Length: 180
Image 1 (cartoon, rainbow, N blue to C red):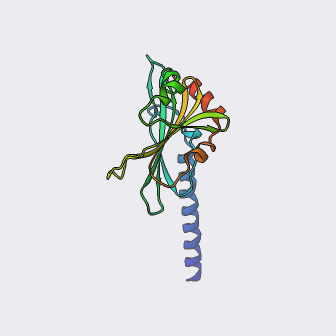
Image 2: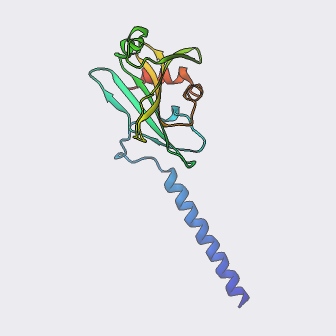
Image 3: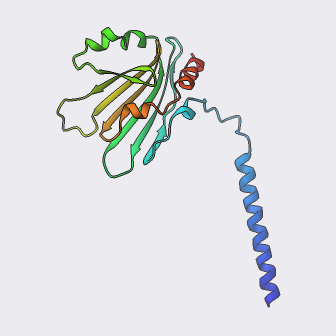
């Protein structure tokens, strides 16, 4: 009787090993021709501790040269907080984020420096009962047509410190190389 049990154990081990091997091989198989997912900037987005991250599909307009991709970070620690980070290229940014334009706004931002790049930090001071309103917005100007835009709903994160975690050179190059 002990032999049958022992033999059964060996058979079970072999079956388990075979199943694991099939799983590994199927995971390593190349993507099918039907898999047309376009690579984006998702590898450039930072990880934030205690936040879940969802990377959205890239958005582009080939006629205007606009390209952007957003990652949404939801706080998992018991308070409402959402951070949306967008890596973007748009020829209109040169004018949109010029000193004259932003200083002339109704609620002008504070100029900040982030890793030797100019940034604009807006605080939404309006009283509102809307929980999901944008409370802070930071635009880090990488070049005339490239920015990192960070928008916060709720409170908790320091957007300037968060922006410092990006490799600006890699983001700028990836945006330059992104489809036009």
